[in-house]
Figure 1 (cartoon, rainbow, N blue to C red):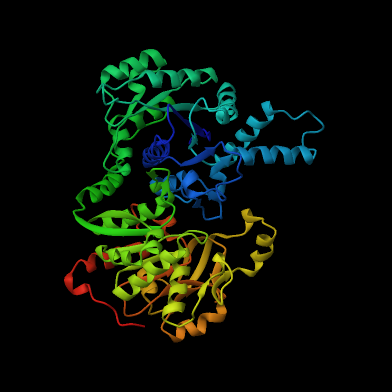
Figure 2: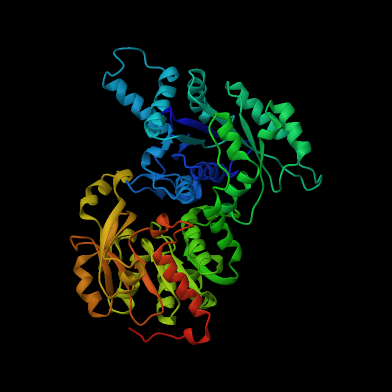
Length: 551
C-alpha cells in the first residue's frame, strides 16, 4: 500500500450462528488478494478458553492446527484454503487470551499502579493484537465469532468502534440471515433489520450487508434493507447457496463487491483478475465420475444431527484430490461403534472405494475402528489412516499379523503389548492433569525411505507435516513389526519417531502420524490424498477388487 496503512474489514454476523461467515470472509480475502493486495485474516472467538485445543469436535467443530502449533478454530483452515496461505496462532484471538494477557500485565506492574478496568484496557489489548498481525498488510479481515447481541462480543465490538473513532481505515461488513418460511414462500428481512439495530447500539454502522439466504436476494428486498438498515442499496450483497463454497469469490466478484470495497478506501480496481480461481471452479464443475469414500470415526453426532464440521479438513482434502482426478466424492459417515455392536456389518465396507480412519482421542469406538482397519487390510480396500488412524493400523497389524495378543495403545489403558505409547516427555504433564500443553503440535519434519509408496507420492526425501498427538509407535516393537512386513516409510530426522506406515502387496494401505489434510488446497491437493483417491478410483475396475495375500 503506497501510504503504508492497513485497511481493516470487520465481519460480524446476525440473526443465527453458522451462517457461513468464515466462507464469506475468506472469499472477500480471496478477491482482494487477486487484485494484488497483501491480505490476511484473523478470527475472534469470544469464548473464555485460551484456544480450541481442549474442546470436543462436536462442541465447536474440528481443531485446526497451524504450522507454529496453534490449536485454532476451524475457520482458520477455511482462510488457509481460500488464500493458499499459512497463518500463525496469532490469527485466532479468544477472550481467554485477551483477559489472561491483561491480568499478566497487571501482575507485572505494567500499568504503573493504575486501576485496570474492562474498558478501556480489554479493548486496547484486542486492538494491540490486531495491529501486531496487521504489520506489512494492505488488508486485515477480522471475523467476529457468534452473532451481534451476544454478551460475549461486546468488548470486541467496542474495540472496533474505538478504532474507527480514532480514524483507522475500517469498513464494517454485517452478514445477516434472510429466512424464507416454507408456509409463506417469501424472503423476510425483519430479522436482518433487528440485527443491524443491535449492531447500531454498539456504535457501529455497517458499510456493507451480506444477505445470506438459500437464493439471491432480489431488488425489492435490497431496497427494503437499504431503507431500514441505512445502507446503500448497491452495498447489499447477495450470498446464496452454491454447489461449492469455492464459487463464492466469483459470486461476490460478479456483483462488483471487490470494486465497491476498494472504492470505499479510494483504491484502484483491476478487471479480469479472477481467471486462476475461475480455473479452480471449472475443475470442480467438470468432475463427472463418482468415488465413494467412507470415514470411520466417532465425532459425528450431536443430538439428532450429524455434524460434518468435526472432520472438515478431511472432507475438503478428499474433495480437492477427487476433483483434480475428475471425480465427485460421495462421502459416507460410518460410526465405528456400530461394528462393535455387530461385527458382521464390517462387510458393508466393501461397498466403498476407499476408507479413511481420521484423528481422534480416547477409547470409545476404538475396537470398531480396529475391526474396520483389519477388514480393509485383508480385503484389499484402499485405506488411509490419519494420526490415530495410523496408530490403530499399527495396533491391528501387531495383533493379527505379528501375533501380539492384546496389543494396544496405552491411550485406552494398560496393555500387555503397548505398541503405541505416550511420549516420555509428556508423561509428567499428563500425570498432573495438565492436558492443555501435552501434545506434539505443528510442523514436524520426516525423512522418507526411498522406494516406498509414500516417497513416490511426495516425490522428495524430506517433508514437513502438521501434527497433533501425544502418543507414538513404541520403538521396542519396531523390529517385530518390520519382521512381519510392516514398512515405516518415514521417520523423524533422528529416526526415533515413526511418521509413516505402509504395507506392500496392497492396493493402498498408508498411515501417517501427521494431519496432511491441514495442508491440502483446492489448487494443490495433498499427495497422500491424491494417491488414496487414485487407488479408490482404480478399485472401481473389477480386476482391482482382489484380496491381497495374507501377511
